[in-house]
Image: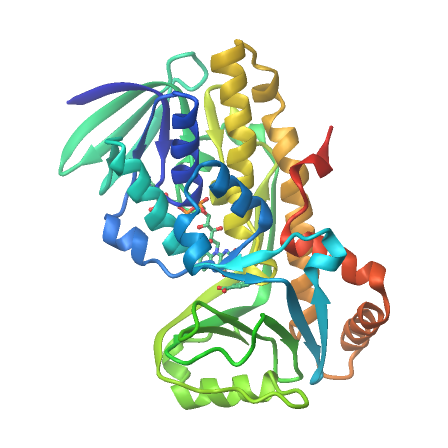
Length: 397
Ligand code: FAS
Ligand code: PHB
């Protein structure tokens, strides 16, 4: 039986777990990460691409933004389309200079993993956390399996950064939280294609055929999505069908969509999920372990990292100031931003996805909202400040 001790034992080497470990190190708080999958698998997972201003600020504070600054693409605005009419939301002028960057989540994962391992720190890949025990005492433990051998991590805190399918949320006492869920009646089919983006900034488009999003990964790789039914299978979507639908749904005066070879296709369900506690005793949750947002607002990864900021504040308060005040307030502090992200993601999802027949009452409400955004600087500002991410000081208790 393998046994070792650390101050904060982290489950999961996704954005939440990796940012937490690297950030605690800055305060000389020891941690260890155990990760179910291999390093290749984790770094190969194609997921988010939008990096909020807050996340950029955090990575800069950690000294881990070199490649982001070199390879990330700064966007100072976003295009919103409705029935082939297109408007632009400028970020800088509406938010005092805050912007987003496009930089794949897997690139952030690589940068954070490289930094962690370069310091000689411990990250056990292909290691499965099987049980979290004694989290109602000051000596919680994680039981794990690796290569058929069992082990135990003795620690002060367990940080479950283990995503929607992890054991962290499932370990919380059943009566200690409420669950909230929305499963949207549609999914996203996402592609990566070897073709230069046809736009300088992202395009979110409502069309009577369904939603489409034009994102990107570099000057030569485009990332695009189309709304599909929940029962859809990737095999029903040939490259030609995908490009035809994207061309139709992204159409606007003067816009031409360039096509190219597709090298990645996947379907992601659209759902909102959350629980209203992120802590039980010495067990804390961060990221998808506690909440899922539809990717329409580009919030998932950024929200995971925002949870970690509050968690680091709480651990520093505990270890350096011998205080549990921020730990006791962790759930309340994190939930303010999580609900803001849930609301914005739900707003963007309902505004741009086809949910009823063209011309229906629902459609008319969507159109009225878009026409108001077009006419209102106040509404454009609301969208801009939520999209780039509200500053942490916006949520002072
Ligand atoms: P993660 O899920 O990234 O990481 C959790 C880690 O814990 C995983 O590596 C997992 O292997 C590990 N783990 C689980 N159980 C374990 C156990 N028992 N023992 C050890 N390790 C365990 N967000 C956006 O903003 N934009 C997008 O376009 C977008 N697209 C997405 C597409 C898909 C298919 C998915 C699933 C998510 C997408 N997201 C998107 C959201 C995504 O980016 C998440 O918000 C982000 O990965 C959250 O990071 P973590 O909380 O670290 O969780
Ligand atoms: C992406 O580039 O993958 C992306 C960007 C913005 C979103 C969702 C996904 O809202």
